Amino acid sequence: MTPTSPKIIFFGTEDHSLGTLKALVENGFSVAAVVTKPDAPRGRGHKLAAPPVKTFALKHNIPVWQPTRLRDIADDIRALQPVAGVLVAYGKIIPQPIIDLFTPGIINLHPSLLPLYRGPSPIEAAIANRDAETGVTIMQLEAGMDSGPVYCQQTVALSGDETRPELYQTLFSLGEQMLTETLPNILTGKLDPTPQDDSQATYCSLLSKEDSLLDPAAITAPIAEAHVRAHLGFPRTRLSIGDTPLIITQAHIDHTKTSPLSVRCKDGLYLTVDELIAPSGKTMSAESFVRGYGHVL
Image (tube, rainbow, N blue to C red; front, side, top):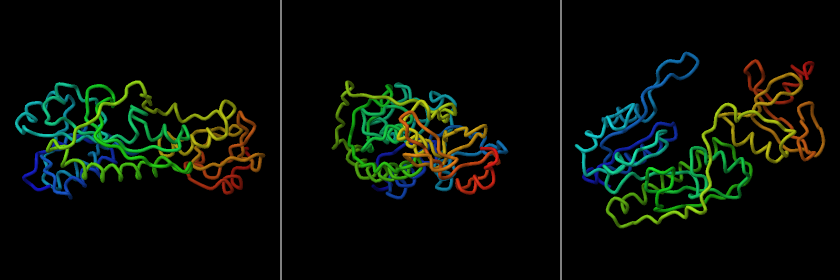
């Protein structure tokens, strides 16, 4: 695309929104404004920090809007019409009156094979459920949760070893490529979306710290191991061995107890911890932890 291409307003907040915004700018799309959440406290000092897309946009002289209510920027959007929208991990529901301001609408990158895993945690769900495949969908946004018609999809095979951070990188990198390749045809009306089959829809929920707790006696070892990979980074996997609370970052399945850090699961198999975050906050191997903390196990 060229600087005279149809104008785009980009919606995004999370760290993985940044790659798509960069791809749009680098491929010559005309990004007229970036909409992101207000600056929020981050880190141990809880200092206000700008979303990464804001920092990038300002460096490229792109206006940044950070409304607490989207209706507050309705007049700004109208002033740019006709304008299209692109949304990647913005973090807020877009009401239909705002969607209706865009032509041909708001195009969304969703990291699942919709209608599977509608909702905010499709990557974590695919890993936790030990799926054989997942993928990326480019769709047209509507007020319903990820229920809009689909422009294109691409499938990604899963090996069963993926972690949450790795799969985020894989799927959003693929999504950036898919979006930049299909967006010209979407904006010019050459590519029409296909409605989803709502009867096949499944849903995933917003994860919280409570989802980090692991009860090996209530689940099988394969599900426990997948939980560790699916929740790496956030909300993480918390497990107490003896009276010692741990955060598990790597683990594998054993048929027998091979370590003081092997815990028996519902199916009689064991989840053996390979790496963890100790109560001190330090990340270490299981061997190092046993050497230093074995007396409390």
